[in-house]
Length: 79
Image (cartoon, rainbow, N blue to C red):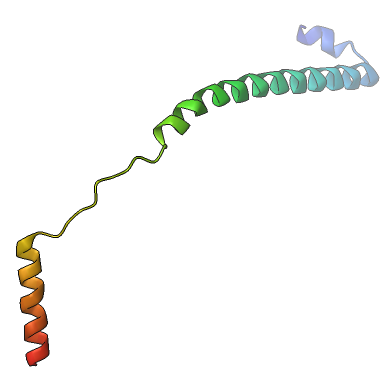
């Protein structure tokens, strides 16, 4: 709509135009939101697959760490 066309509209007509534009914009936003949420739901299945707990190997202390720990305890007991 050209600016000249809007200049010729009454206040009531402009208000109605504004309301119609707002309603249409809300409809389009809601439709786009629904599209994005559906896409996000599709993508979230991959997130669930990646987050499945896998049994991680248990870290065992090294023999050298055990000896150091014993030495530290002996020093602490002597003090």
